[in-house]
Every structure is written in C-alpha cells, then in structure tokens.
Image (cartoon, rainbow, N blue to C red; front, side, top):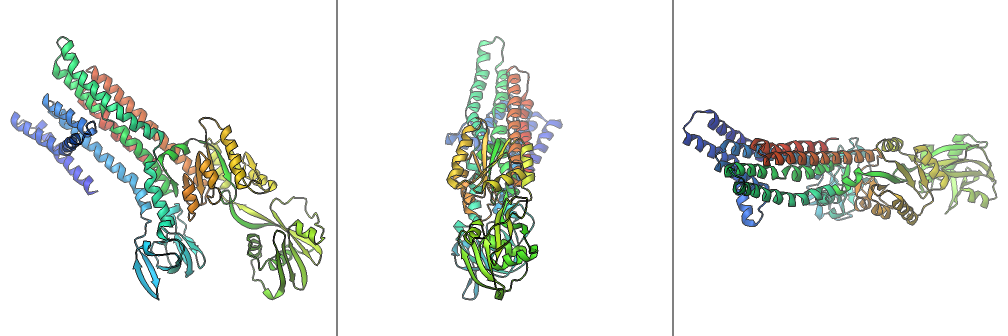
Length: 616
C-alpha cells in the first residue's frame, strides 16, 4: 500500500506541473523545462526499466513501447500528448497493482491459516516451538484464540472450533475428547490438549497452502493463448509501425515524415498488449480467489475453465449425496410396541462398535443397563445373539433368521429400501428395524440447481444394493443410478460414460475422495467433497470442496462460468477497440489521446471488469 500511495503522489505532482505548463503564459523555455520535469517525474521508472530490459535482450515489452512512443512524441514537439500518454499509463499501472492486491486478498487470507508456533507439552512444561519441530505422538496445548498448528486428536478439554478459513462456513464446530482437529482452524473458547497425528509437512494446512501456491502455474487454454498471441502480436505491430513511418514519406508525394512518424507512434502506443496480458490472468486469479473465500479450492485456471463447461456429473453416493451415517428410519413390529422392540435391539447391540449398532443405540437415546445383557456373540455377516432379560434375542439379517429356522413375517406392505435388522425373541419373530443412510439436507436443492444451470446429465455410481440406490436416485431426481459397483466397476462404468459424451462436453465426477481416487483422476474434472482433513481428497481431485455441502458444487460452477464470461468480455473488448484505433491511426483519423485510451483506458476497464470475478 505504501507503493500505491507513493505512485499516487507522483501522479498528482506530475499532473500539477503539467497543468502549469499548459495553462500559464510562460516563456517557451520555461514551459519546455516544466514539460521535461513533468515527463521525467512521471516516467523515470518506465524509461529506466526499458533501458535495463534492452541491455538484457528483452526489447518488446510495454516499457520499451511507451518509452519510444513518448520520446518520439517529444521529438516532434507533441509535448502535452507525450506527457499525457505517460501519465495515463501510470494511472493504469496504479489500477492494475490495486486490482492485483484486491484479488490476492482472499488468497492471502487463506495463507493466514499457516500457524506461526505450537505450544509443545513436554515433561509437564510448555515450550513454544516451530510447528515443523513437532512429531506425531507429541502433545500440544491450544489456547482460546490460537490457530490449530497441526492435525491431531483432542485428549483433554472441549471447545468450539472456527473452520471458516478452510470451509467458508461461519458456524463453529463443537469438539471434545476423541474428536479430530484440523490445522489452520481457530480454537475459539476452550483450552485443549491435542495429540498430534501428522507432522507439519503432511498436515492439512500444508497440503492446502501447497495447492494454492501452485494454482497459478496451471494455465487455462485462453490464458495460454493470450500469452502466445502477445508474443507475436506486439512485434508484428512494431514492424508495421516502422514501415508506416518510413515507406509513405519515400513513395507518397508530399507526405511529411513528421506526420507519418506521429501515426507510427500511435501504432506503438496501441500495440502494447497490457489489457490482455494483465486482465486475463487477473480474471482467473480473481475466480480462484473468490472460490477460496467460499471454501472451494480450485487447483488452477485450467480446471476453472473445465468446470465452466461441465454438462454431465456422476456422483458417488455415500458421503457425497448422503451423510454416510446411519439412522433408524422405521420400526415395524408384530406384538411389541415400537419402543419396546427398539429397546431390545439396543440392548442386544450394546457391545457392538458397528455403525448400524451405533445408530440403533442413538435412536433409543437412553442409558442401557448392562446387567440385563449376557452371552453376547457377534456373528460376522449375520448379526448378534444375546440373552436380554433372560430371553434369547437374535438381531441380524435374513440369513441369521434362516440359520435359526425363524420365519420372517410380512408385517408391512412397504418394502424396506434400507438395511433391515430383523429381531427374534425366544424363537419368535418380533419385527424389524429399517436403517438408512441419511440424504444430506441440501442434496435435492443442489441437483435441482444444477439442472437449471444447464447440467443435463446427473447420475449416481454406488456400491449399494439396487433397491437402495434406485430409491435415493428417485428421491433426488437423478437420471440414473448404477448400483452394486465395486471400485473397479465404477472406473469401467465411468469410462463408458466418457466414451459416449459429446466432443465439447465435460464430464465431472464428485466423490468424497477417500476411495474414489481412480475415478477422480480419470474424470475431465474431479471434484472431492468434504476435503477437510482428507489427504486423499486434496491429492486426487482437481477441485476440493472443503466441507460436505453439495450446494457448493453449484457455487463452484457459477463462479467458473462467471469468470470465463469476464475473460471473454475482456478479450473481445480489448481486441475490438485496439483494432479500430489501429485502422484509424493508419488512416490518420485518430490521435495520441485515442491511442492512450485504446491502451491504458482499455486496460483499466478490463482490469476493473476482472475484479468482478472476486465477487460471488
């Protein structure tokens, strides 16, 4: 910001001197001295950079073009136009540096997640150390208001954790003993002791910072095209300008060299490709920055460009469209009440660590008396047998019921579409519990919004049973569900989809990044959901949505499309204006003021347009 202020002061002083030279009735020599003073004050850095670059062999850059054009204008006594070109150029540079600073703010804010220190607990004492010195297994103390320096698990205390720097989600997460904490988040209100699980280089914060820092290296096709275009465009226009200054005075009767030199100088000013070379990367950078503020990490402008063209999406189910945790959806009984059947099931499952057993105990929601249970036996692939209140209880699948010669009764007209846990008491069938994986609250809205945004094909690839997968697909209004797929089958099915897609279509895959790495890598654009804390997600995907909200997918596509619209607007606007002024300049119908607008004016407008990519 100090540099911005210094340049602004320089522009103001130069403008004041310039106005004095124009407005005051001074002797010609004094006016000339004021012109030279204004010119040198506003343009000394441009002249110096041009001289230094020529020595280094970098001739055709904007500094060289501006220096030749303004010195040439001085040589033919166009003092006011020469100074105005340099003044306007510096105003453009000021706007550019401001725009870059603004677009870097969101990235810088993300960079602020990097922790400066860790409070290492050693022999009962606290040592303030560099996070890189802490090893897995060490204990660290994190006080309220401090950044969490490394990934780990809470062993003492409870707190609220602000994950907004990574997820864009403002609601704090309540965490206590046994919960995992992620580096880069902020501890809000409780002192906690954490056992470190990963060294700093492998921590979430390091992976994210590495990803963001390398994002600018991956250029979009349009960005690469502009770089290549500028490489040939500028020398071509410079050669044409030289020919324009030299040939007409030789071959056209009555042509004045000073007139054609002036036209050539207009060509030089217009030929500077600043508007394109600056605003295009800035637009992509703004898009990536705007997405990062929403908790969406895009690994490069090439992926941003691909994301804008997505027309078909394949989803994994568990952890992507559903929460990946089980809940008791329905209880169907024969003679007992629903509460009684649920209590029996909870007691039988009280010793099991299986997710389904956990969901049954959570549904019961009361403290279980362990002295009511004995002889618990877990049979893998079947279920659990136990003595509950002196009665033999079997809780498991149909295979277990068949094994015990217990007839499963048809107690409801509705066919369960989730996992069914059948309960038998003393050899009699008592009913069943239907367990389902919960659909995320925003999944249905996200699918609807994706359709409205022009994504015409939405399918699901899942390892679940056909009846479960198809029921979820129907509820979410997906086009198709490919079910009972092993990881290798998912890749094969995705390859089929890739082969059928149109030439301009982009096929995305959205998964949780844990067991979907092969498909994420194969997709035109791989999107990992719930990347917070998942190394596999950050490594395998092109886009990482840090929390598990499917609506963020809609946001990511919207940001990508807006960014591409801005980039195309800048390209068309800049080329159109420059083309018109080049033609008018060659015909002697435009002057240096219009040339300045075609260069600096267009740059400023394009840069201001690019800043819009930051705002969603």
